[in-house]
Length: 251
Image (cartoon, rainbow, N blue to C red):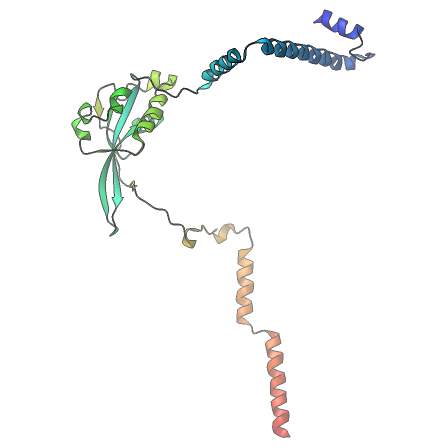
């Protein structure tokens, strides 16, 4: 770095420095010129390469950044039987059991005692789940229906099990090939599959008067007092009309 800096200073690439405070500025310029020379060398090298070779290099580099979303066939995966509901035209709820994959973090929460609508959880290989063959699942899953976008969700769920935390700490919750039902199964908050959220004015959250920061109480009191007392303009108009009527009658 010292020889490069001396050379640049001799050929006049850098201004003359007379104080120690300007030394960082001189060093920054030296680094900038060095980077520019490296960039020029890189451009000249790539321009000499065939176009096909450059394209293959770009594709190889792109493959290192997660473009391949494929999941290994022997990847670990958990499937759960969820107790859901479907709302009929008469407003009544009908039981529906759905088979859907469970991510590693979701199963960790369930193992910690969180409420869940999953009655049973089983583990298997990713390739076995992709067949959608009920014979590979326990008998408790016989009444279940495969969830929407089952293949895509299985791939996404299987990738969560590839993380180091899941591999080191969570595989023992439901060992491969086993079925467990000792979770906090609870239906206090029902999952309605065809639920439609219709928003209306009653959904607006009103702030309590004890923490009124918008002065609504003053506005309400002003409106109430205005409604309680008649308007002075109306009183004047009424008096003028009575005077005119008295004048006509006296005439």
